[in-house]
Structure formats: C-alpha cells, structure tokens
Amino acid sequence: MRLFETPLSSLGARDREIWRDLAHVDGVLTSPYLLPEFADLVDAERGDVRVVIAEQDGRSLGYFACHAPVGGVVRPVGAPLSDYQGFAAAPDFKVDHDAMLRTLGAGALVYDNWAGPAPGRTRVRAGSSILDLSAGAEVWLERRRGLHKSHFKKMGQRRRKAEREFGEMRVVFGDPLGERYAALKSWKSAQYRQSGLIDLFSVAWTEGVLARASTRAFGPFRGFTASLYLGEELAAVETGLIAGGTYHSWMPAYDPRFSAVSPGLLLLHGIIEAAENLGVARIDLGKGEQAYKAYYTDYEAPLSAGRALRSGWTAARVSGWEMAEQLGAMLPGPLAAAPVKLRRRWSHTAAIEPDYAARLARFAAAFAHAPKRLTV
Image (cartoon, rainbow, N blue to C red; front, side):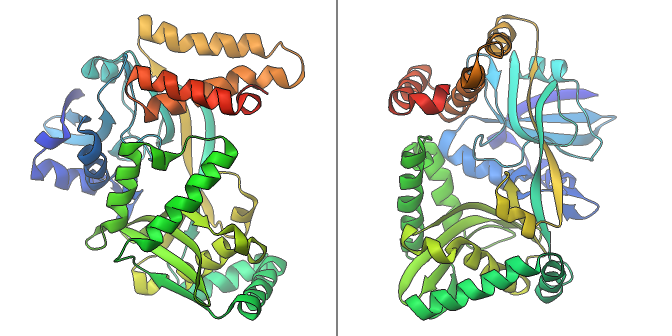
C-alpha cells in the first residue's frame, strides 16, 4: 500500500468523487463528517487541512482528512467538532499508523471518534446512537412505543402541557435570517459557561464552521436548522448536517424557561415526524450516554478514542500523560481521576487552539474558573 498526502485545496474532482463513493458502505453513507464537503467547511476557516490518500495497484482505497501537524501532533479534520473521524474506506480498511505518521511528518495522531479499525492504542470505545427511519416515521414510532410505552406516553403529556401553558406547538425548518441560529448560540454559550467547558462559539474557527454549516441550506450535503415554537416563543433550536439520507444532530439547545416540558425532545419528535419530507431515512444522535437516547436508539455505530504514536520526542510527550494517569490512579478518592480529567481538557483545548500560547492561556483560564471540575 502506498500513502501520500496533499493539501485539500489541491485535490481534484476525480479524487473527490472516489472519496464520496468510499464514504458510502454498501450504498449507505457512514457519516456526513467523512465527506470532502465537511473538510471544505473546516478548511475555509483554518486553511490547514491535509488529505492522506491510500493507494494500491493504482486504485484509491481510502481518504483521511486531517489538520497539518502542530507540535508534531496531528488531529482529524474538524476535531473536536467532528463526531466521526477516520478514513472514508471499506469497513475493514486498516492503515499502518507508523507509515501514515511518517507521511504526515508527525509523531502522534490523537482522535476521539474514529470509525472503523482504529490505529494505535484505543482508550475508549463507544457508540453513536442511530434511529432507523427507513420504514417511515409511523412504523418507527409504533416500534419504539412498543418498547418504551411509558416514555412516549409522557412525551404526549408534555406536549399537551406545553400547548396548554405556552401555546400551540410548531416546528419550523430553515433559518433564512439567522435569528434562530443566534438564539442557539446564546443558549449554548451560556450552557458552556455554566458547565466550565470551552465555549465553541467563542473560538473563531469553530464558530465559523458552525455558522457556515447553518447557512448551507441546499445541495446533497447541507446544513440543517430546526426550531420549536410554543405559541410565539422560540423554545428550542438545533443545527446539524444532512447528506445521503442521514441527518446528524450536531448542536442542540433550548431556552431554560421551557425545561419542564422537554423542548429538546419535542423538537426531536418534530424532526422524526418530518423525516420523510426532509429526505432523511436515518437520524444520528451522536456519541454520549444521555439517558434519553435509550428510548430512541435502534442501534449504535461503534467509535473509538485513542492515539497512535511514532517513536520520538512527540510520542514521549504524549506518553507522559499516560504515566501521570497511572501514577494518579494510586491517589486517594476523587484525586485518582484528576490526571485523566486534566489530560482530556488539555487534549480538547489543543484541538481547538493550534497556537501554543493561546492554548496555554485558555487552559489556564479554564483551570482558574473551574479548578474542581478539572481536578476532582
């Protein structure tokens, strides 16, 4: 197998066509995040996206979009925004990570949501929650009601309560004036601040990617905004990506004033009911252990978090975190988890801030504002 890399901007139309085909397994799109169009969204904001191409006997086997290495570390395109990462390739495709890192001139690859056989060492395996609506929303709802009668009964009660207290419920698709995205941004930023997490809307390139996606309303790869109104009040908004019959729910938020009636779930029900008209046969709710997903998930797409290393200083630096975690495990009580939390926060910050000085400043600010969250 031969590996080579090129700037995304230099990739030709033929390669892009093959890339799209490889992102579909048996005709089904693995994820919008594995398409060249998602890489384009990110590159328009950062300008540093590279593509590793795997070839054998003159035939392209896989495409992997990533950012140019920073400090010897390479990350998948769009991380931490990209809910799927890895090669657009056949399901059993696996690459020699040492050869890939040499091709990129990097010493380490760090990933959070790798789809397919993961390179190097996997830390965590989890699943992205999938709703299979291929038989239609009514069939899906009947099936899920049979499995979780109490939950769906409660959702009916919450809708009636919402309409009784706030006004008629309606779901609106699209956002031509950008006002719904602005509301989502405000709610989500407040949520980030309250939780002590990095506000993705405060970072120029991540906010730019989200904003570009929200305004890309047409075409086979498009952004999607759905909004829930109760009476005349905007209660919930979410934005995501649609491609190949798959809707990936990306960034949901709601007005806390309506939390008693579960506006986010009411909006999800509205999207499910409209799925056929939207050209959606599958909804991907992403990775996470939120309790509500158990009521909606038909199956999970496996994803891995981990890292791949090539011998050298960068690998030694990354491995230092592991040594700290192993030593930390010997500490008493909640302190044992402190190194793991610190490593996760540093990795998240490093993905968001390519500039080392800005990264240190953001990490220090996070520690100052939420030391308990980061340590215990």
